[in-house]
Image (cartoon, rainbow, N blue to C red; front, side, top):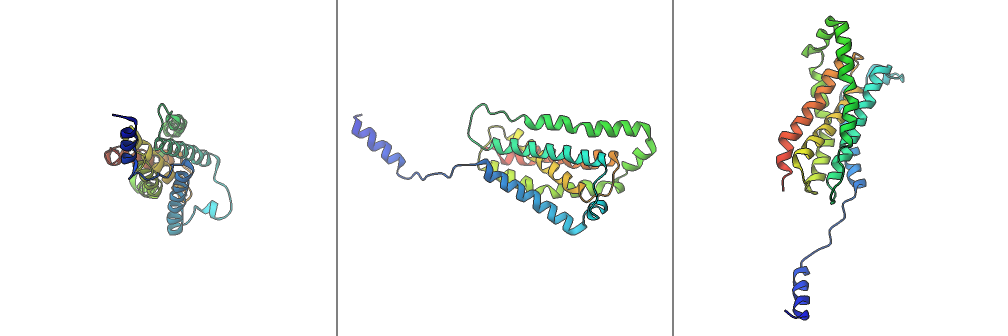
Length: 216
């Protein structure tokens, strides 16, 4: 094949190609922020903020600490998911794991408190005292989950299973932070159990439901 034939072949292959808009993490981040804000606006608009926040006060120290730990997990998981949607080899997506390990301080603290007051622990574990928080947390994070799913759907991640986990954890953590702005409970057992379940179950749902949909 001579040089002219090679040029004609290349031109023929490239004739129908169109430029692709580059994927930028900043754009995906805006989707995530929009999903987070939409979830917060929906829940707080329907149910209102917790009484201390609505009165201009601050959360007590332990609930505030738990809030920021879950925020850190949500941000780290969302960032990892956004990076999974970019082309590249050898990227490190493990940052969310360190935030997850830090967030484990919540159930450990709740466990220690429960050992000291088993009656309070049993009351906090009653479904009527926390099931609604778990459901509201899972639902409030759907906007973040949808934003990350469509971002990764267009990016074809190399590990759909890991991507599903991370999307679910980011969505669950976002929802748990939103619920914390509404839920009036300052009980660490309640927060670790019911708010934490929203994160864990969202992560599991992402792995089971979203991972197959992200396959090439």
